[in-house]
Image 1 (cartoon, rainbow, N blue to C red):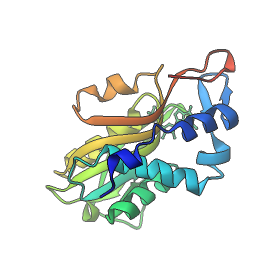
Image 2: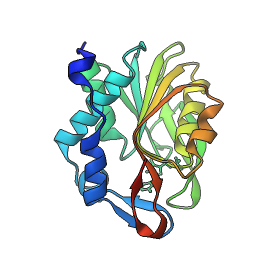
Image 3: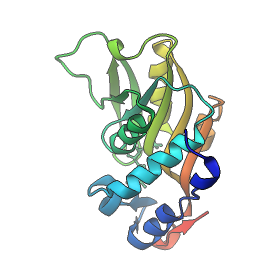
Image 4: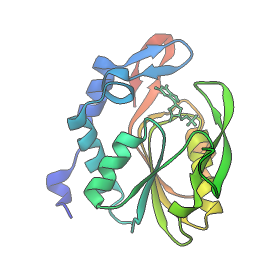
Length: 198
Ligand code: 5GP
């Protein structure tokens, strides 16, 4: 689709932005509210999506899956480039929808478990899905999505995260899935509220 050499991007733009505009909070939380999680930078987000497409170009992808809310922006741009539908997992079980596939996810930022769900209508057995999200921390959200995809009889071909907190357990949590996992920026440490990028 694109010439890889012309197109190579080490995401310096993203890493520079994390260093200039990200804020490290006590407790190992990185705030990126000014360009990813609240206000969003569409040019940066499109470059992020292009890089995900480049990294997963070896796979057949039928659909993009993400989890609300912060995964939706990068996921929809990946879906736009690939011309594939984008499905977001809901962080609740809507009373108006029936035949939902559900699982429990533990939230690191909220320190509690919640039920996530998708309608069985939108994942078919045999489909190949690419999961896109903003953060990989302990991998609980991603693990929940992998469970939902598996319950539907579909297959995950890979997982792409904008930011991975390399000092948390996400990689280990997801290792058993044996998937291609790509993170565009890996945070080495947030110790003393200083952001260090690998
Ligand atoms: P996990 O399930 O991998 O532990 O955490 C993934 C989710 O938690 C992400 O989708 C993100 O919403 C949230 N999260 C975890 N750590 C951070 C963080 O340091 N900063 C922000 N903004 N969100 C985080």
